[in-house]
Image: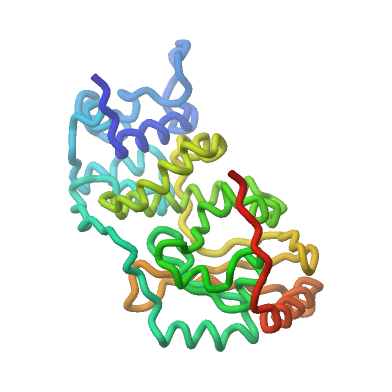
Length: 295
């Protein structure tokens, strides 16, 4: 019986995107029932037996040495982020302890930094499940003025960026290229789930999105890996119109599960003027009108 593990599912998805031509293998004039490389071809390229690779992909082989993982990464032409993901999925790298509860907190120093940045830069802090743990007035005015500014202070009702992108109508309308934003969210969630396999809250989030969004299901099945870093988004903001912002994500020192997310615009551009207008709005609007998410 095929009991595909997360590691096996990732390997299968990655070999499906390659052809013999991509890796310098002959076709032998055969017709393939499925796209991509065969298991034995991946095994050949990685220098392992076909039986061993098959057991890995079917979930009947629980571990692989670092040398084998490196060989598979080369054979499947993985990017650096995908290679790291492969290691996270392998049991040989060691499982992180399970995490549970809503105990994530933002330090007083980081809250002070957020408040200080509000005069110049929209920003927020996200946790290990993409929950918004805190945001400054400008970050709130940019991304979610339809939500209560104090929402991140409630551990049981914090806005979740992944949930907002897929299930919240105003957030979906905010992004001009929503599919690209959605794919980036899914790619980051793949990394988070591999790094935190025992996180029941994260598993519940994935289950919810899978049940409620066909688009999420399709993107999730692609096993795309996309770490957060730098992205450029064009936003259709309901208050200040269209603007283009650069989103950057930084790890928070001494808080390995938290990230600081900032938004900037090209100096002197119309987008900068729009951000300036939002800064004023963020300082003066203390009670934004709530808007219910899509069911």
